[in-house]
Image 1: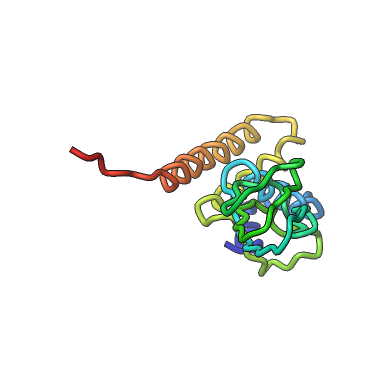
Image 2: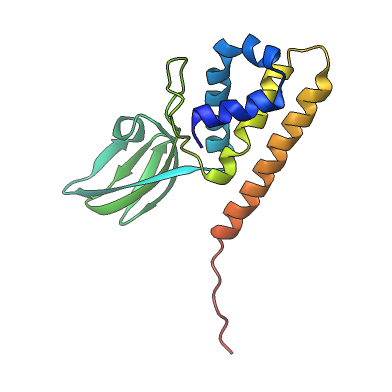
Length: 172
């Protein structure tokens, strides 16, 4: 889904006047929503292979500016020094880590494609609609949209957990 397509869904959920009233904040709300989803439910995972000839301290934020969480390290001997840095001994390593999606600003094109999974993207218009309606006097709409957002994310989280499940045949 693109940013422009998601905006059209939000326009459908809200009346046009309310939609137009929040034009300056909509992209910020989409940015907040996508980052929240990526950090809690639908991780954007990257891998980086490093071959080292000597022990080295790696600062993950310098390795990838969008880094936010180290998931695992495969390879030889290593030690976590802080949430953002590891010390790797001599050898070959594969670093598995999560990143934040690109920042959506007021200048981001409507052609921008969201970086989270398609299933999680369907929650974003409800998140934006909930943020717009939270400032209104009637919070029922906010609650309805937020509940829909949360419900979609629960399903995405369950699907992700199922996808990561490993089944091993038991010996008889």
